[in-house]
Length: 201
Image (tube, rainbow, N blue to C red):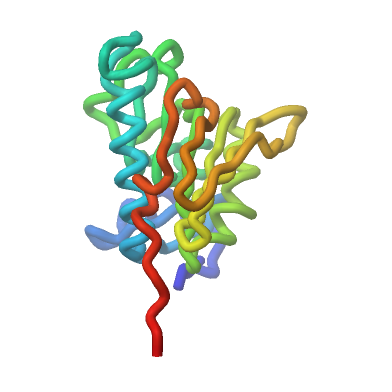
């Protein structure tokens, strides 16, 4: 269960003081603890990250590997507002023309991503969709993917006119081209795995 510590006067120092290995997010003075996700969550995030990273994140320009042009990072500490709105998307991407290099000696990503991806868990779904999505929009994120590994569905949102606009989806074992990575088709069965037959009895 995600716990938002009731006090709304928590600071980044409180965030840094959390025990080693404890993952949390700091949003406007409130700390939210993040439990370890289940296997289906880890699988979807890991395999999607590997796929997008290999096609888009290896090179600054198109090559035999894929279109390139992005950094695709796993769980970066994004400071949408420095030391006050600190969130950790499952995956985030920056176009290389906006972020030519990945910072080497600092864990704070102060430049808002161009794309974020949140993989829903029962304990974090409401925070990911209700709390964090408006913050991403306000910070200037242009694209967001919401993945529901139980429903085996990916929903794509594009920023426009001060709101998130639904811009596409894919589900189950379909092969889809989803913006902003629609230059390459994505086989969702690769992300979600084969559908497990129901257990009888």
